Image 1 (tube, rainbow, N blue to C red):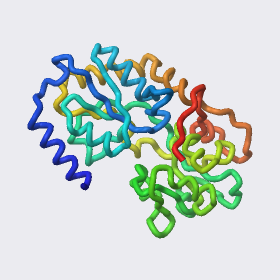
Image 2 (image 1 turned 180 degrees about the vertical axis):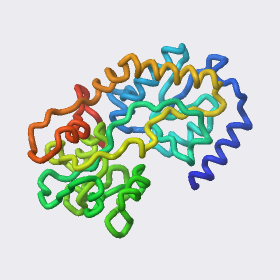
Image 3 (image 1 turned 90 degrees about the horizontal axis):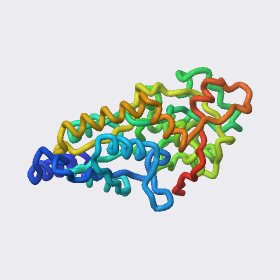
Image 4 (image 1 turned 90 degrees about the vertical axis):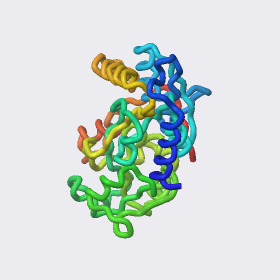
Length: 284
């Protein structure tokens, strides 16, 4: 079933069986999510992560009950679309999703960067305009498609696709592709899929985060607009007070630059983050 068909069917069904004042009768908001460290994941039988904690804090702030369920992404999206008292985090606010939900956010997201293996001295990138001189690895369902196209990457030319989440990492480790794109928040976890560590890579360029839609909590349109507005206000308060940043540092933190020489220090600080005191799960 295509994504458009899925949206049309589930939205029509849910609007048929629900009213517009969900949560006004003290129903819990059921928030679906996927395994996507450090934003949302299962750890010691608890669903946690930077953005899960932010949702929990926002729900507590406005005194509503929020419960979390974790599934593979496609199932999580189907459940969120059914409604009526449902949401999904962390999701991009894309054009094909936007009209099917009301949106709270943006939540936390990392600096997106382009990386090469530290051993690849043959790769010389002067600026982001020169990245297309090399071969990029990406998954077939990459969230970076629009960005990669803008940067000059084309399928069959300088862009190689691989099936499955983080499937690009092993070919990257084997030098079958030259570059990968990842978030600074998740790069360490992704590298582990290819038996790599942070010491094995260096950042070569930052991607303007304005080119990405960010991470959001998408809630079913049957949920009362006042609840959505109050969640948004609570989230903004978490950021303005510094509480959101404190939560972020519980999961990821910058690492000191100890070389390699020739890497811009500002670029390094933006793109190189490591896991904090908890161990993030890795699906190999």
